[in-house]
Each structure stands twice: as structure tokens, then as C-alpha cells.
Image (cartoon, rainbow, N blue to C red; front, side, top):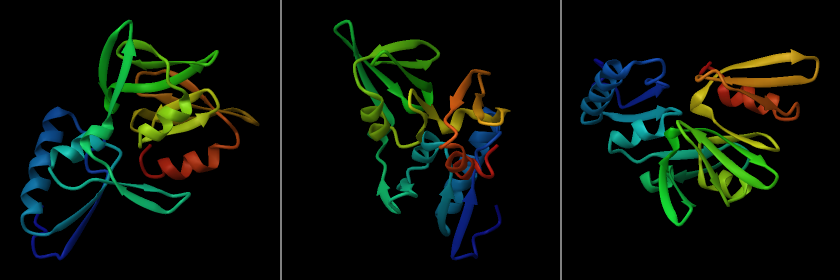
Length: 179
């Protein structure tokens, strides 16, 4: 990363497709570079950005608003059977609403009492791809077409999630350059 003589360095998805060793090398390189120049990183990997100890912002294209995302906003607290469970956003694959109750799916599945709308506002890098689904954009591997008006996304864990045909164009824009 011999860019220290540049005033601003723009990095787009520098963490994509890296294994743990590659991720650590990239994080170290970006940290070292941050001491020498201003860095703007565009990435779906919010937890990794927070590990850089730099301010992290999220951009909402519909409202054209930019806001600071604190590390606490990437955590989701769920009350289940009298216990409070804390999940990091990168531990969640997708969230599904079934009969008004949400299921939060990651390595384990949790049932919560929040609505999809409430969760959508709490999780900045999740996308409402269907009336019953919020999907973690960082977990999407492919966007597929099943027929003329039938679409879906395939997650990295091979789960397939339906995508509303009214959401396909916006989702393609969000994923441009990442899959």
C-alpha cells in the first residue's frame, strides 16, 4: 500500500473474498496507511471497519443521508425466555417474519418479538428484499432469476431467499461490484 503521498485514498470492498490471514494483513495495511493519509473505505464489512478504529458512516441512498454508525448499533439484543442475547450483525444471515413473529437466523435460530420494520431500522446493512425477509447484504453470494418474475438471492451458506420483483433493481444497485 504505497499510497502515503496521496491526499485521499478510496478503497472499495478491500475485505471481500479474504480469508482470516488476508483480512488481518489488509486491516494492518489500512491502519498503517491511515496514519499517513485520509482514507475512505466503501465496505459491507462493518465490524471490520470498526476494528480500524476510524469513524464509520452509513449512507441511505433513498434519503441521501449519511450517519455515523457506532459499534453498539451493530449489536442486536433479543429477549428470549427471560434471557437477553446479544448478536453481532455479522452473526446474522437473515431475518424472516412468520405469522407476525421474527426468526433471526445465523449459526443458531432465535425467535424474537420485534417486527421486521423495527429490526430494519436497527440493522444498517440489512435489506428488506421481500415483505417477509431482511437479508444481510454482506452474506449474499448471488442474485438469481428463477423465471420471468421470480427472483432470489443465494447466501454464502447456500440458503435461498426470495426477492420481491419490485426490489430487484434496487438490490442489483446495492450489490453492484460485490457479487
